[in-house]
Image 1: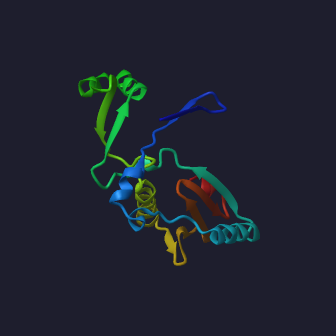
Image 2: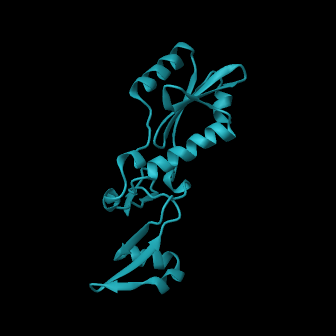
Image 3: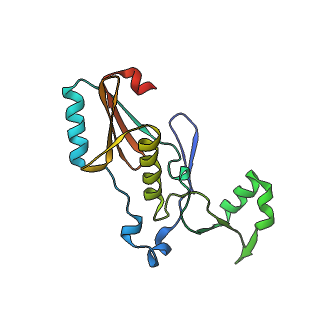
Length: 177
């Protein structure tokens, strides 16, 4: 678990699994997620400038945790992290065991977790499906991380690298919706 204080004073936490043990049985092809090609990023930025589009960039918070995990994965929480979990939710106290005089809790993942090999791919699949099936975007035939849709007579473009997104459209109001 990584904790850091943001400029606004809030504490941001990031859980991180150690995916190295998955490399034994997961191939790169099974776990690699597409990301926007640098050429696509440059070209969409040129189009944004030439067409005088409005551009919004954003980070999707807790992106990986929005995707369901696709296999049985156990995570070992030990020491201060186990103590913190029990403090936040006392019902976990029943799962505490001790190894080498240190508190340990084993838990099963329901959602993708940063550090598991397939987390980025699972999130990419979820985001792509949402953009296509729910919002009606069409995938660019040359880049799986660029999609377009006609909105109010103008093209909207979305491109992303993992959970960092760039949206553009002629109308600021479209981007705010």
